[in-house]
Amino acid sequence: MTITIGAAALALAMSAPAMADPAPELGSGSGQSGLGRGDFGRATLTGFASLPALTFVPGSEPSGSQLGTAPINGVTPPFTGQPVQGFSGIVRRHDGTYDVLSDNGYGAKANSADFLLRVHRIKPDFRRGEVAVLGGFDLSDPQGHVTWPLTRSDRKLTGADFDVESIVRAFDGTYWIGDEFGPFLLHFSASGELLAAPVPLPGVKAPENPFLGGEQPNLGRSKGFEGMARSVDGRTLYPLLEGTVTGDPAGTLRINEFSLRRKAYTGRQWTYRLESPDNAIGDMIAVDRHRFLVIERDNLQGDEAKTKRIYLIDIRHEDLRKTLVADLLDLANPRRLGGFGETFRFPFQTIEDVVILDDRTLGVLDDNNFPFSAGRTPGKPDDNEFITVRLSRPLKADPRVYR
Image (cartoon, rainbow, N blue to C red; front, side, top):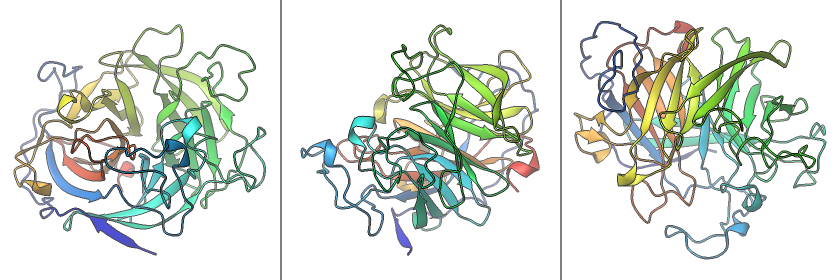
């Protein structure tokens, strides 16, 4: 079944004239005050589409019973079905459609037991400003790979079992998903069945980890694998923690390397340094063998939002050679797409999806935290917005990333 819904938008401006490419200098620059050396220039909005917040999976079970009965941003729980929300990871399928991962539901283990973990298939229509939901699949563990008690006897996974936040698709069609409760790496079939036991990150445990056994956690609550990139050659994963491990310098996040052939961590590790210890990351994707894009954000929304940025990093350098490629609060919008003005802001609390569409164009989506976030319109739950952004110059990415 296909649901087509969305907000009105102006025509897609993918044919807008290209800006002249500046010299391809790649120095380090934080972008904290103007452009740093090597930072890209101002990026441009080229496409806008949205999925209304009040969108539910057809025929789904009631959800949100643990949210109480008081209105939240004008929406009153519980809900008669499961919302299509919380896009915290994206996979491009190269046919105009995308797999998007809903996170653990309503933001916490304690209130998400009736939210089924799910991958949705969507198709944006930038000319109409709409997003079509083409279907999807629930995540489950029918073979019993999870050894601790699950919420449901049918072994469908819920937001009380895992907090799934990142997703990649392997060359064999299976999915690897990053969890924040362990943190764990989870390997699923193409239809969403868990294929093996959850893989823990050595030496790191969050408060929700089922194997804590009286130990003190050394990672904050739900601060696990918010971002995860797959190498261009498909051999390795690079999961990125959202939180700082106890004992590490404030505002630093670990990137670990995981071998898909060995199904084990290699021991290689890098450190991503946030612009502020109060910031968080939203997603990570490979550009080539050594470079990656990372979304970095503050925890604010609407007019208060100050930091919603996409950085290019290079792991060949000790400091990761961090370069600002797009400020999502200051996008040029000369064609006034989406009915917005000449400056477009993506002012959401959590922005957790980036995908490379071509060497100068990125797709970016928000996680609307339904029904809690209201960054676009105060007092109204955020829609799931899908935008395309043209960079001021090429990434010079490995073509396998976007072909």
